[in-house]
Image 1 (tube, rainbow, N blue to C red):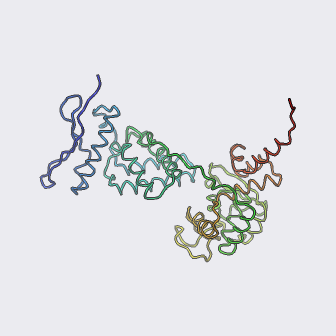
Image 2: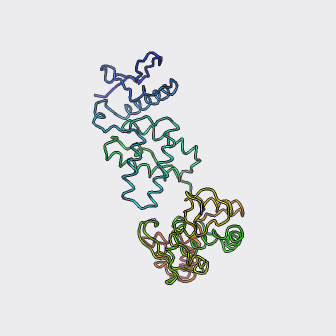
Image 3: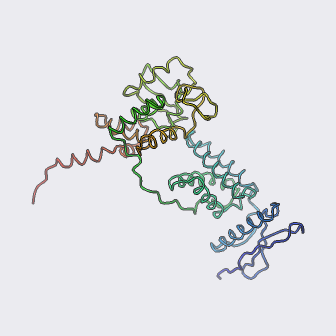
Length: 384
């Protein structure tokens, strides 16, 4: 028999009456089902009414998807949504690299900010559903001006956090499982700069931020990711063997990697010799990576610069300053092309970049398809 129900409605009373508010509906003609779920803890009338209407909409959505009201939720552990998110993060970070852990932390900080802004922070985790998660994500996308790629990245991280919350029986269903990824725009942002653009970029960086110029050269010559360069310490520089020794805690895949100092990198870093081994190569003297002047910036210092500092500096100096619409990361693509053109085989480039397979490396090499096309043109076939 098909289930039927009445539309969930909000029952309100003047706050001074002391009577509890609730959402009520009838299911299959039975007695009214009443749902309160923390509504009466909200002291402000308008805020309580807003949350009550949202709860009614959630119940309506659940009924439309085939939900049968029962008491199963009482067997779930009771914990508020923010506490549950922090729990999920602590569990997840036990099994991921430091870089991934930092990305997860960034996502939950944004999400908790959205929860507080939309006044969902009083909710229990087992009452937090797709409706609420989607509303927070839509708010953050508009507020933070996320592109679809950023939205999808945070969506994936939060989905993995909530998998831990479900596993701990703090909620029944992962609210992010039914939220679709947004279609990402195809961009040519990582197309490498031309030789002419490269010369302009390097001259400009040397003039306005020499330390950042060296930072950029390491990405280009050695293929080390910007966030790995940001976390380099003096002790990771092996001048005797002319290489960087990257510990697993700063690499993307969590594995140790040794990268040769190519080009003139050894000479560019010569002033790092004899400095405190625990200093960051491109650090700051300001704790927590705070605001900087240009003095001593991107140079050996005790504190790490913030994760977004290199991209902000790149946008200021190169995208806005020179009008060159290329990303900081495109230096790695340029380096891959130039290494291949100089005769370095793909497998070696793959090892330097820390890729698990050459197919991934080939995606960085924009010149490779043209090279293969030229080789194909040399083939002489039979004419019939």
